Figure (cartoon, rainbow over the protein chains, first blue to last red):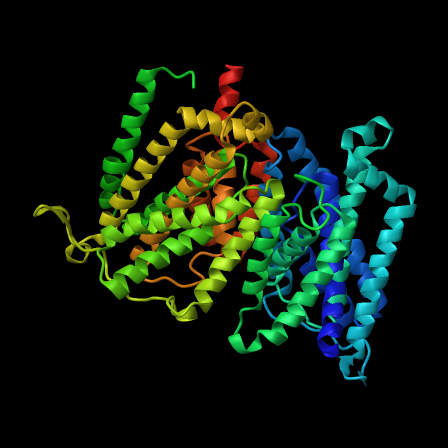
Length: 288
Length: 326
């Protein structure tokens, strides 16, 4: 039982970090970023290259993943999404763009890194084994790092000038603009930060699960799930959704083991029922 | 919509002549019989995309059409294989089954809007795949294979459609079947959109609260639209199962659902015939790029991004732009 909870918390921390990036982009731009999973994969491969292939320290690799993805995110916002939002009659058009960029990233990743499953050497060796919980040290480190990143993100959004501006933007774009917030600039920063979070999680998780070019889509779906559970566009909701999904996955894999591979089926069904009762998730704003 | 009645009729006649006479003639002259399969796929995919377009029309982003296509395929395959039904009977049954299922699913989830609906329908596609893997009747990952070709259809002793297995060229038969259904489907769509219900649906797209406040029964309308949409998805899935004579849980996946949505976007959300054009362009574009080998996906998605930047309102908006200028 303790083991199940520990696994759930570890998974939850990872998932929450993935969902945060997605929800940030959604809150600022009203864009559902289909390419989020692909950004995660890209981050994973960059860490694989820098840490696994070139042998540089893990911290450098993580930084490289984060910075590269932030630059990509900023460019995507400036040259793609901003243009389409301006020219299109309907907001949904950004979804085609997002899906197209997802395909594009898939193609680029496949060309650059191939289709093989890639892993890197462990960052910390050894296994923690006490009080009925068995957990490799590297998972503990990665879990702790994820929680540190989440805390840093929340504090940054809460107390920094940039964070305040972005929260204002998420609440009411026009009002924020009238108060002198430079909407374009902060949209770009927000998109960059969302992409950076995806890249950082990819870099963190490549040390444990490895990475391959095909997992982008499934990761995106999981991120959508978390955002739906918590409510789209809300930071607290993304964190809650991440931990809830992590916990459900961990418990489900244990409890439903004898029925075969039905954990996700049960989670999806539960989500449908939940959403018909609470259409906006746990704490989403209405009609986000 | 400013076109006069005569021009419209002429356009329809020309279109019918192209798909029913010109295309088969050109194909038999050039000997490229593989094109039949491509064009059949385009016709079927555009039927499913038309369904997605209809949900766009009531202001919902539908990424769940793959679920209904899969469902329709399985219903038809199971009825043919396990119960010995005729394919022609399973075709409407598959559509109706999907429509009924979509009413049950739609009642709760159609309350959702915007990205919530989009994400739930995306999840629905995954649910359908996992269900097909888990249920005993669908035969798991092995799928249902060697489904017989559609048999003869006769009413009161008169054979309307011959047995596909006895035909020399079953590709042509499937092509004609798919194209006929596509024409019927878009005729229904056109009629629907230009009817009173169509106008009401448009009011849902713009403002549901306002529509509801002046007495439009929004809950009823959106379930109807969703059911029609799923009916199209089920029919196209059933024919796909018959053509490939097999169906697997991976026959329709999230990628297919996303593609149905992209077809609508590319053609233009404001135009009834957008999904048809979008499907044609995307499917043929993908096929043509096959020669570029490993760069296929890269070029394809790159072109899609460029198209989106240049024509964010779909290909058919090009016609409107030139008309305005001229």
